[in-house]
Image 1 (cartoon, rainbow, N blue to C red):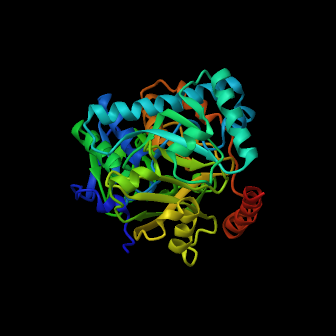
Image 2: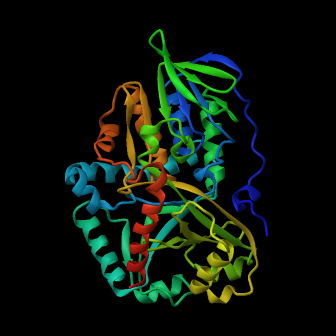
Length: 423
């Protein structure tokens, strides 16, 4: 079994970009080579800006290139919570942006011929009767309040026909959502940005910024970028770049396994409509078929930030709760990594300074939302910040406990939610 991601195994070697050496000037410096950073660079370059993108490792090496890759609407905290934070009108505007995020994703894939196995369709599935009732309420509310009609309820017969598992009682199906190969998608966005003139530097970590003659100077180990604007899109990978930002997010470890190729017929039997699937537990499971007929199954979360003993074995056991017929299937890939969450599970956008922007805290809903975040960030830098500013109105608080206690306190809080899932 490999510890590498299946995504890397299924992706041709990407062209390398040089590390920055020396000092260069540009209009905008983008920090972070995931979907958010690559989308920001692309949309700025399309607007005619000179763009430099700095990535501390390789393009797509963070959460964007190894995620569960389900492209869905909404934000992780849910619309009810969002309405309580900023009001219904603003929450509706954010909902509209998340719907646009899906069409933007498909548009970019088509415009730049990004080969990333995009597949339409996503299901949410309920394990308990109270979850089934919640799904029915969600569909009704999205249709009546938000005018969203791409999501519908599935009856029990259709659910059983689509997923070969007795575990679930009810489901929704969203024809507007989907799933894709996230590493190929991220690399495709980077290639698109480069084709528009963006300059990309890998193995170049942004360390800090200061000012010189009214311009920003972003320091790296072997050079510097002089820019008019700075866009911080590194999320959890930013590390200690900004204490103000790092206090608002927490990196939590998630895990995915990939079976051996099951063959087309056997894989099709598992999920007949080839939708991506996620359950509605707080500590959720998600799974989907790959283009080469594997099952990708993930969702086990470590809020302690540690890889717990036997993660692969435990994730496989969760997979067999759903599909016991895969008991003979070999696990060929298993991987994990950090995704960033906020206290309220809402995305965190804003400005550290008038010309220093940031987007972070996608809380597991990033595969589509990060793409539209890049577009909104480019709009804001271009002088039209209304949509970006709606997101920046969402209030955020530091994780309590400081450096020493913030993670133990989070672990204790999450135990309560796990107990709720079991009830």
